[in-house]
View 1 (cartoon, rainbow over the protein chains, first blue to last red):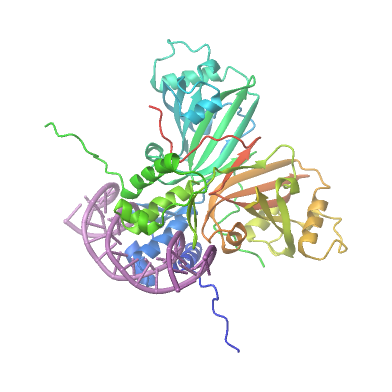
View 2: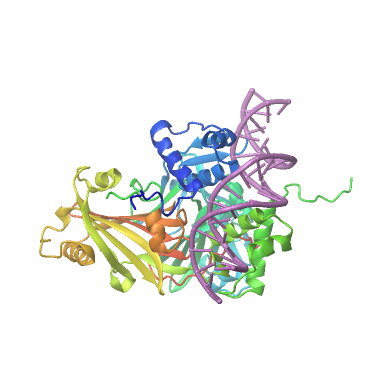
Length: 253
Length: 253
DNA sequence: TAGTGGTCTAGACCACGAT
DNA sequence: TCGTGGTCTAGACCACTAT
């Protein structure tokens, strides 16, 4: 019969809401603007607050919104392009890329790290903690594992601990030559400590970049860096000024 | 007074649950094993189902669990390392990397894509759709935009449409020389069409890899590939057999 | 103190896969 | 048909921020 086909596959409400809100953001809001609060928005769209929140969560995951407890929901600026694999810097990133040493201690790393480094599981390695800041905002927290063998000339005179010690380890590390780097990117969630440094709640989505630095046939160092997934776009190869993706793909049919 | 400090910063229930479940997965379950259903699990831990689900969502985001409607929740295998920037393959990935052409049409791309390609916004470009399969599982869906100028020798004889057309476009594209590639990785959510090809629900988290192929000073092609964030670890530089990250970082104190 | 987002509950019904 | 995860509701209370 001639009945019009109306949504043979009905869209979930929160997904439809996401689309509506996304279009509203494009046309009626500007960066930094504050949205109405969740209770008002839910009432306006005639849905439960939990359903509205599901839509907002999607948009936050896509980097369109920023939500802060006690403050409100604001329209997020476009993601920042962050270079993570520039050809010019073979060793771990430097201060001009926004890296700042926090502290350093000597401890046995997680088993998986020890295995990759090729050290015994109970052998202490230098563990440097750093943060990366771009445009005044924290974007990444890093743990850099450096076996003693990679920094043979490090002396006790080089500051016993703290940020100064961290800088000393990095300085000694850079005396060697890097043969190759291998990086991997995957999705993760921020642990309590990373979350604090990234100014996010625990469980916030992060892009985990694991990098092996190979020198003289060994793994000279291993970096595990967690980048804020909501605000960062990781760039490889070169400049970070490409702006293409924006939420789920819409087809030009 | 001598009161012991008990959680001055109380952990959310779902976060604690996540930790408990994560440890249980490590010690009491093996890959592929089916977990008890959500209602039973919630009852067992004395929480509402919604709270239990929040914990499961975290674990799924971290690639530890796989949930399928109508089936159940199973323990996920470790993430697959997928090479996305091997030095050996300058042009878009080939069949030996698991890429398979789906179809191709000629249409005006999204405005942002046209701007990057340097074509007029209403100028049609070849739009190749491909999927990538690894270990028998779909891992990525790609849209490859190729301006006509990059495939000057493409003739009408080369199949008018469909997968054959897509392969013809790729073949012609590869006749040129690549100067450089620029890639960016960011978090996104799967649109309805990508979700279907990736065998996931709409809104599923994906890693969006945007790659510019530069030749003769121009952007010769632009690829937007969406990888399943739950099952994939994207590798850059070289081999994909590094296995380090596992959920939120735990410090070796 | 008032207002915001974050957490949690105890239900209900739906869509899908297996049987 | 039954059991599963997915969606949705209408509340409640908590933690944080600004005033």
